[in-house]
Length: 90
Image (tube, rainbow, N blue to C red):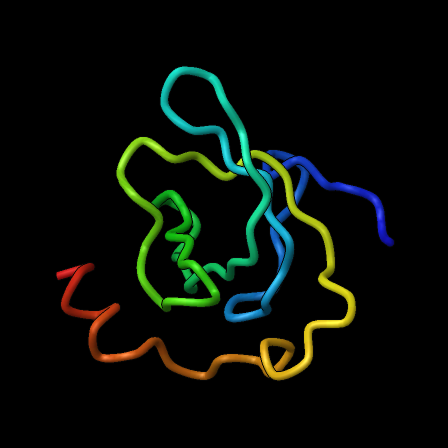
């Protein structure tokens, strides 16, 4: 497995499915698969759950990521978010 990268040190390519560590409410953390949408550099990146294509809940913060291995179908790069994801963002 590849090493974990702090999001302050760099971000994966937009729409690339990666493993992410997420800090939850109350300081707990979990690991999920996610991908980020393109951002213009000034806005905070928007991360989506790779399984549901939905944004992570408010208050969940991606802190680290690494290249996902053995992703099967999830390894396909995502060219566009789903319509449901766009509705959640708007």
